[in-house]
Amino acid sequence: MNAFLNITREGSIAILTMSQPETRNALTGNTAVEEFVQACADITKDTSVRAVILTAEGPVFSSGGNVKDMLRYQTQQLMPDVIREEYRNGIQRLPKALYNLDVPVIAAINGPAIGAGLDLTCMCDIRIASDKATFAESFVKVGIVPGDGGAWLLPRAVGASKAAEMAFTGEALTAEQALACGLVSRVVSPDQLLPEALALARKIAANPGAVLRMTKRLLREGERSSLESLLELSAGYQAIAHMTDDHHEAVNAFIEKRPPTFSVGGG
Image 1 (spheres, helix red, strand yellow):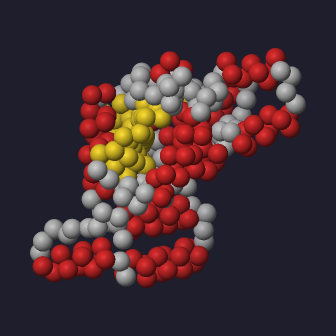
Image 2: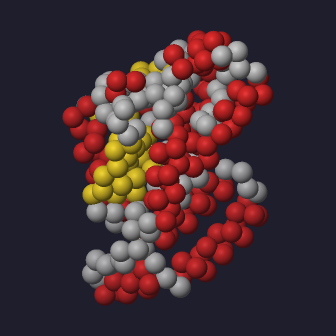
């Protein structure tokens, strides 16, 4: 089987394409998690990357966990402690890597995002959907709970009430319903999905890389910090930002009434 992720670059934008449409881009029973974790580590080290787009090949964004692979739990009579460790050392590594990636991530959702596939979109910062996309927190439909962090991720994307409705019913939302509840920020035709995501990524990547990474970190920390703690962290980051070459260039460009030219590494 081919690699799960096809990684390409357009300048300072990394494009991650899930490339196993024959499995509906399932996230388990393959090397998906390992490849995501490695890709996030590589992007973190590469300061020339200022934005990431996550999309998929084929008609389905991701079906989430491979239900056929779950038969192992019956046929192999695995004990609960073994299954628990499989989750901890498997799918649960994905949100730790992707959600905590300091580079802005845009999900370009081309089709159904089901179960862990929906939760994968919630690990991204911005979600753009094709009008062919649907979204379902469908774990209850197969008699399991969200084991990948969905119970933490989804309420932060749509609010507690809508997340509860989606998790308790397992029913799917259309792209327009996802737009209405704030799960996605825009809905476009399938042929405009990647161009729209790229246009947004270019706007993001036009800014200094180091400041983008610190800004994302502040947004993440703001989800769980007190105001006082976040203000202290913001002050520290701001002191760093004021000393960067890119800040000096931005100020000089503003005064000289010209477009700024930022460094490749964003420092």
